[in-house]
Image (cartoon, rainbow, N blue to C red; front, top):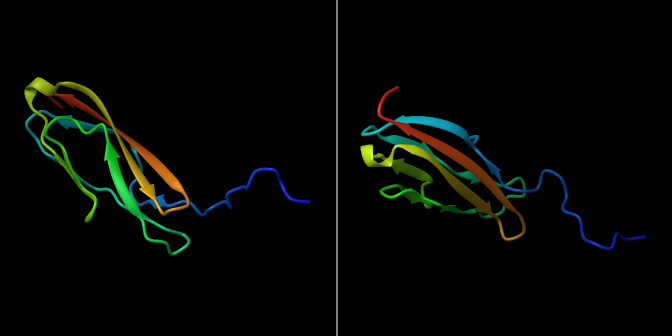
Length: 102
């Protein structure tokens, strides 16, 4: 007997090499992260980012995220990164808390 809906095999989705979570950043100081993923199936991974704050850059080719928030950007920003292999999609949220001191 087969299930009505196809099920995805466990452990097959792309896996990010860096864990998401909260990062604290001081205004005027750079934050640089290498955000990329690997495939447990040996598939080609395509990465992307959503909700980038003004001035932030993500280069999907090398996984480099760079941002230097200004004093006008104090507050909290959540950036979502996606890794897709054509079959599975994984997302990872990073929350950046920008302050003028730390």
